Amino acid sequence: MSSDTVVKVENLSHQYGAGAGTFAALDAVDVQLEAGQVTALLGPNGAGKTTLIKLLLGLLPLQQGNISVLGCAPGSDRARQRTGVMLQASGVQDNLTVLELLRLFAVLYRHSQDIVALLQRLDLAALAEKRFQTLSGGQQQRVLLAIALCGDPQLLILDEPSTGMDPAARRSFWQVLRECRDQGRAILLCTHYMDEAEQLADNVLVMEQGRVLMHASAAAIRQRVPSQLIKLSTSLGDEHINRLQGVQSVMAVNGRMHIYCHRAENVLRELLAADPGASELEVGGADLETAFLALTKKPDNHLEQAA
Ligand code: ATP
Figure 1 (cartoon, rainbow, N blue to C red):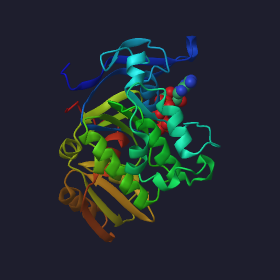
Figure 2: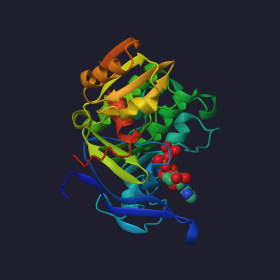
Figure 3: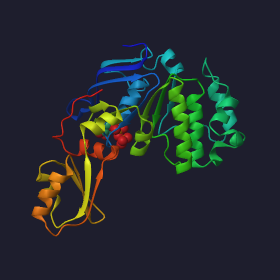
């Protein structure tokens, strides 16, 4: 474990239920989070992301495997003092003002930040005297980030933090996260927004059915899955298209087929031979979302860790 390693997870498994109703939510997961890096945690619903986060925070008991947070057990006093958290169901006393809330949380930490400076940095100074319940969804999210930062955390765990923000608010939120990263904090960012992962992530952790499908840089994921996206109108069904060599996945979107593949020219040759009447053709490079979909759509797309 290097001195920059903030979180180390080894061989982590977690089951819910008991007896015949046992369900494996995590299965032999290995993860490492480094100081000064944003790791985006991606995966379809039920992949195990929240279970992993809860275990990192000590909110679930450790059943199998090892977790070290800043060299300590998850949930220990030292780990909690240096961890900032924004969960989906963050409940705060919503009749308090923004300033009151931050003062309230700051006293819980030994290394609390200067609250006034924090409010200014997060563009919240003008809202300091407003009650939390009167703020818009995006403003509330920014206050919750301020609360997560008020203990000057070395580790920041953010579960879908930009939900409810308008595009301008999201961009300024991303800027704050970049500053946090540049200050040397390790950030775990659970998001369903691919553009968010693409904008911010140094590493991407893709989970599915309790397992880590891939942990790599965003660039490496694109390289390992050199996906291209073909869009076209065709009389061919998705089952037929899926059988063509090089096709990773197929989706019908607004009356056209979206075909994710490795080499568009090879697929197109076969497609046009099978359906010469295909029309409205578009071919483009893939973004992270495409690569991610391709990774999770087909079970036979076996990819090893590349980090
Ligand atoms: P989402 O994107 O929908 O938030 P997730 O990746 O966070 O999903 P988890 O919430 O970790 O997924 O759930 C992983 C699996 O464990 C799911 O199949 C879920 O139904 C199951 N699960 C989660 N919590 C419990 C629980 N308390 N009891 C039983 N099963 C649970």
